Length: 265
Image (tube, rainbow, N blue to C red; front, side, top):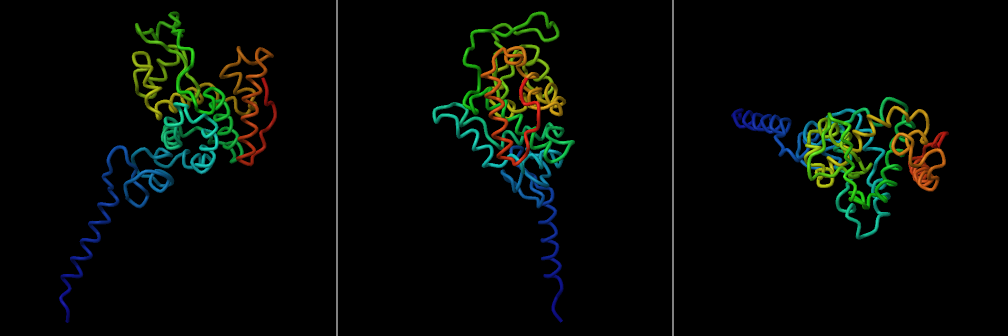
């Protein structure tokens, strides 16, 4: 009769390995996969991700977004930016999906087609604002974009609140609450939006969820009005408006979803 001790030892070591894998213990910048391993990318940060910069924030919302915003879809947009564009090496799909994890309500709550339309609308507006993710910051940085009447969000001396990020967030009354919500000093260090791609996408999603998400049922035109209505809607700048619409129609076609009605504003 053989000694059972070695078998028990092997079993014990195997169980210990499984427990260690389950606990993961990854570095903060790595994801713990559903199988308990550390790494980055879809196998680790996608479906079932347990901890770290999970695309879905641990299992809500963003998992479906990741399946729609594929590498091909994201890269197809950013590849239209010129090779010399600063945004080419700044904006990434991983940063977007990381940011989505903090906004589980984005592109969720409706049908699959509703999710696709919201994603198409977000990227249509972002592509327009940034030249297909070419620009990180607004070209004209001369205006401080400080409105002193918003005393709750006082401007900091020496800082300018011009457009930054995918939706070119602007003005102290946006930087202040966005920073407070996301966890960075929006008033004292607005440049953080142009330095960290995850923060950049979070500011865009913060603005979207607070100002645009709820008008999606009204059609794409309502998203234009929510973002830049006074400057582009009601015939004020049809060329700019039509560029957003063209982006939206193109992305809806790529996602195989009907764009719906009320496309203009």
